[in-house]
Image (cartoon, rainbow, N blue to C red):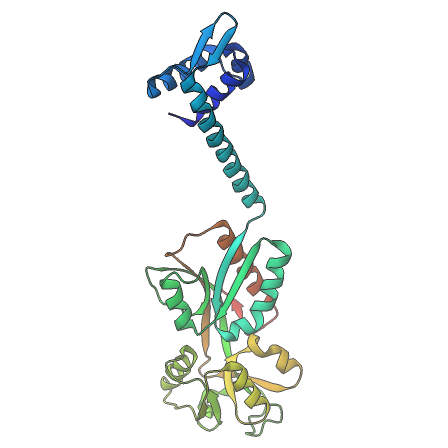
Length: 308
């Protein structure tokens, strides 16, 4: 039994004539007759009785008619909703990202998605890159924005941009860092507030400093970015982050920023999706929005070069 046969059967039943149904369906009458005969053979029963005035449904035909109408209506509804979904994608998409990027990305991303795709609902979660990677691997989230994502079978990743880390300090610069780039060697003396190991940022900083035989002067370990920046603003110490996360604070004069040199420290921001969850139309759209929003946010930051 084929879907096309059911549509042909219903049309013949409606018009009570093979010739009229053939015209309505825009098919040759012999083709229509063969399809109905094949359907009767599959069901091993006659569906129509022929008489002098045309054809009428048999008892089997009347029973099939009720089921066929339901099947065709359901298929039509499914087709309509699928087409509507393509025109106006819908669904809930769960995104996770570290606080340092969520600080600047979440608000414009949510507003843009609401404006352009109001039927898509976003669920945004913040977590360190290691946690985001784990959530992706187990299929708990749809999309992750992470730093230096590992190569895993459960992840599909693509680079978004390369960020340069900077030293951030109080506006009055109590440690006397001064002007211009800061040599990494000075980080042995400048009092720092950094996340504890195994936070990805701390591991990255320690690895870069170890290459030149330097140990960071960490006075306080704190795994909360907002609290860290609050302490920096109050003069309790300095920290290291990407410039984009704090541009508004620097421009407002609440904290100061210095490039780090010899060596420069960079980390790669990546877009990651899970192979453990189906990639829906809505998922692809939100991923595209993230790419566009990141490109806009970082377009005016000299130290950040988009990955090509």
